[in-house]
Image (cartoon, rainbow, N blue to C red; front, side, top):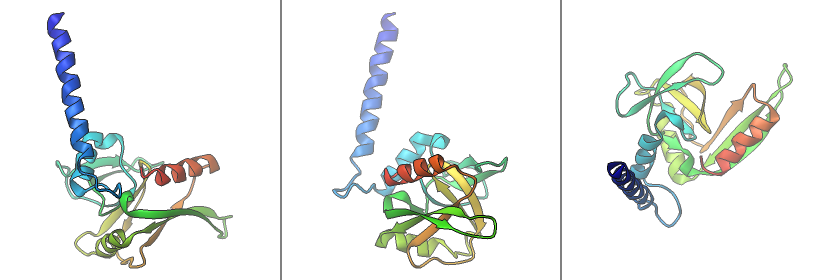
Amino acid sequence: MKNIKYFIIITAMLLTACAGEATKNHDDSGIQSKETEEYLSRQLGADYVRTGFYFVADKLDEKSINMLEHKSNAVYILARVPFAGIKNVVKSKLEKTLNGKGGYTELCLTFDAEGTKHLSEGTGNPAHPKIAAVVANRLLFVAENSVSIKTGVMCVGLVGFSEQEIETIKHDVDLKK
């Protein structure tokens, strides 16, 4: 019984030390450093994948994760850290798009200067033929990476979601998840 008590105390101390490590890599703007992003990604593992655009990887290793595509049985290997992520999103808005089938809602993300640079460098990059869009822990789709986005605005179609789910997704994005 005494050994269990010591184990619990030591575990609590280690968790507290790890939590302090994750918070010390923030600057005054609240934007996380790449080291913090990687640390959080390792800690969260496949349980939560932050909003962003990810390169699709060839093999599963310590720098990648498996993720099930939303409303599909397809599993993809993604880089653990997005090439353009939520930490650089300065604005999000929902836009209704009409088409012959009645339309759908898009979530448009506007990136800051750093995020725009990352988005421009990552999209249309022939070294990475496919990219994945993850929004609030949902792999929405994997697409051919053939067009470079230089405007810093990327819209993602939210097809097949209820209005409540869409509002929850928008809320999560606004909370920088």
